[in-house]
Image 1 (tube, rainbow, N blue to C red):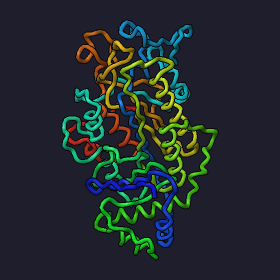
Image 2 (image 1 turned 90 degrees about the vertical axis):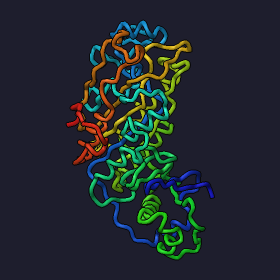
Image 3 (image 1 turned 135 degrees about the vertical axis):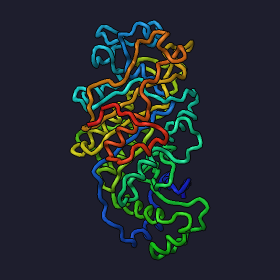
Image 4 (image 1 turned 180 degrees about the vertical axis):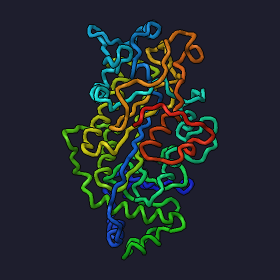
Length: 418
């Protein structure tokens, strides 16, 4: 049998399926004898996409009229002029989308895409690990926070949950989901299975769900164990391997495209998904970053096309879903000696949904003159990431206590959610 594991931290469960072969027969047989409640959906789903590695927000959404930026990036600067060899998509006469984000242009024009620029953390670390940890915990000056901000949001949903209330389409539980509220991490819906770290051998001849559950140690998994077996049964009944996206949506054959495709399936299965997590990797562009070609272009194209396919696939369910992206920090204003950019401060984020006041670039991006730069080298953080996270999650999921999402911080809405 392929290697499978359960990761348990502070009572949060990640049931991770890795490998091939689908749900093991003994689990399917036992779970099939256990009567579960019918699948159901909740009214709203928040999809959070973390871009790991620090996306260059100044290339994703470029203030192309800024002469200081042009001088600082002789090999990386892109213009919105149609005569340019590297034309940006002009949004408002000042900011331009990277051409890899062409799929975002209609969403912006339809006012279903909002961009928040100059967004980041007040913590000035340039460490990827620390910056991600601070952002996902939601406490940028407290490294000892045990829970993640999304787990705290899940704890405020305030109603009976299905096993699929909070799901991460990743191979390991992300820091955002650490905490006391149960969540699932599923690397692949087709391979979803269960095994327990430290559990005794499972009775392969179990004749009922109760026997199988008892064999897997209720002291370790508790109620979450039963919910997870319910999850196995739901997924086995669904034909996830033969899923066909709707409305002509075509997902990229990438990790992010695959994750969003599976999130769409869970939403359509009406299994009660309310918070979903996915990630995009490879944004650390120190060397040969490129413009219309290269690692940045590949990643940004994947991001735009994956999100666009997901949103298109949702069809009539678009009103129920909001998508939000974030990255741990941005890149330096000036390109380095290897045609890349180094660790910086602020970047930008994208928020997509029918309840978003889009068609606008939010935030305060000053002229990139040396005196306006953080540490004399970086785009300054003028919008705290907690403002964005709190407003989007709070409004979309109808949370009653957003202050609890980010302890010790006073919320300040941006004004982008209806």
